[in-house]
Each structure stands twice: as structure tokens, then as C-alpha cells.
Image 1 (tube, rainbow, N blue to C red):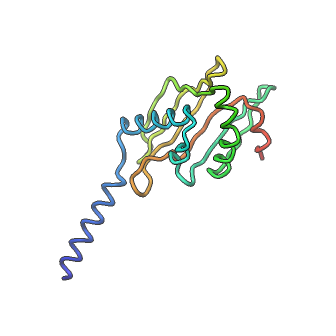
Image 2 (cartoon, rainbow, N blue to C red):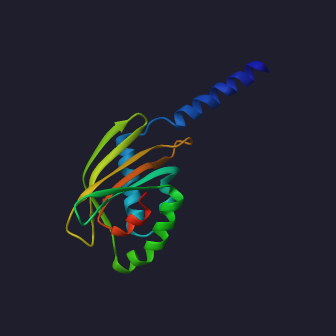
Image 3 (spheres, rainbow, N blue to C red):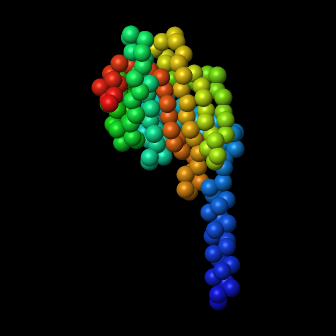
Length: 157
């Protein structure tokens, strides 16, 4: 009986280790493309792409040329997203990500890119740290975007 329990434990541990193994760059890029599609179609599933403790960073480009960094937790960020979603839909707002560069960081990957809002002609820096959660599902663990939206300054500390 002890041998059966020990063998079962080995199978469970092996299964968990395989589930949380590092993803491939192709899997991460496919996940990122699904995220971009969900964001640009205002899908209700957008919040499922984020880890519950994801770090959200906005670097606000002030009119005087300086910047201010604003960080939010997922709860704050999801509330902000809900508030802005209706206006974004009306304006058919989308984000396009170009010059994507993916680098490995432990079990995670960082996608550095330029973000172009559909309502403008400029491109500004962004990055996403994506990796497996404890169940092995890919999640956004950190997101940073430069923005010219001055409204984010009210969240600055």
C-alpha cells in the first residue's frame, strides 16, 4: 500500500511540474495575439488574461516633457478598464503593437514593443511579462505602457 501511495505521489508531482514548465516563445506570442484580439474587440474575457496579482504600470508623458509613473493592482486596473470601455467602443479604439521583441526571463517571457493607439499616429513603448501561473496557464504578470492620457495623473502618488 505504501508503494502505491509513493508511486501515486511521484505521478502527481511529475504532472504538476510538467504543467508549470516554461512555455515556448511561440506559445507566448500566440497568447499575446489572443490578448490583443480580446482587448481590441472589447471582450468580457480580457480580465482572464491577467494574473490576479499582475503589476500594471503607466508612464504618463506630461505636456511639459516629463513623465510620471503610475502603478495599479488588477482590481484598480479592471475598474479603470470598465469605465473607459464604452467610450473606446464608440470611438472604435484599438491598440496596435509593432516591433515586438521577445526575451526569456526565467519561466517568463518579456514582450517589448511599440504601441500605436488607433486614434493617433505616434508609437510609444510598452512591454508585457507573460508566464505560466501555478496551474500552467499563461498569464500577464506585468504590463507597462507609456501613455499621453493625462487623466492617469490623478492616480500618481
